[in-house]
Image 1 (cartoon, rainbow, N blue to C red):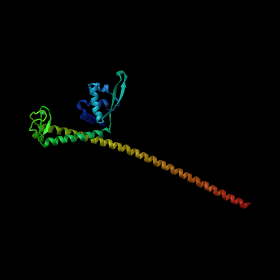
Image 2: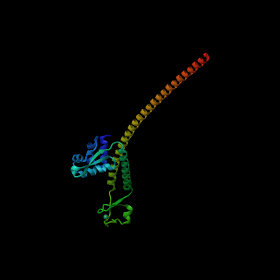
Image 3: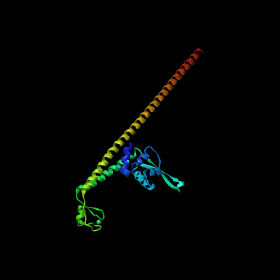
Length: 232
Ligand SMILES: [Zn+2]
């Protein structure tokens, strides 16, 4: 898989600042988390939080080993997952795009109000019902500027869509390669079976010839016996 796509994927899950993690894990197996933390300039807990988020999406996996020197604490070793994990990530992308879409629909459909204290949004209907004051704290609700939200949501949607297109292309390539490997294996199996069939046929023919020779020999022996009887 392309390192750029991996970075885009990792950025979309944990933010662009930590996409460097791909450089540290790419093409390697079981990378020590202390090494990752040091390179990312993060604490072990921060590093684990980033990696757990990626693990939740199936993008990395880990093994852990008890470290006697560190008082019996576990040290985690991380591996970047390849091809198959993309299918799962694609599902997440599709879900996220759906959520963005419904947010957009909501904001395009009508005015939204919000409470400056509680930071909670209310739609037109519930705002009217509450006399345009916050049902939690009583503060007067303010009209939200939807235009800014809509622009931001549209930007996010576009970003997600182009990442989805890249992921789809990559999945297509992975699947095509799997098909090619499968095709090669099936052809090799067919060839092997054909060879075995030919060997069995050869063996049958050999046995048939042997049997025929045996029959001919017995017949000749019987004939010779008869001849001998007549002579006597
Ligand atoms: Zn409030």
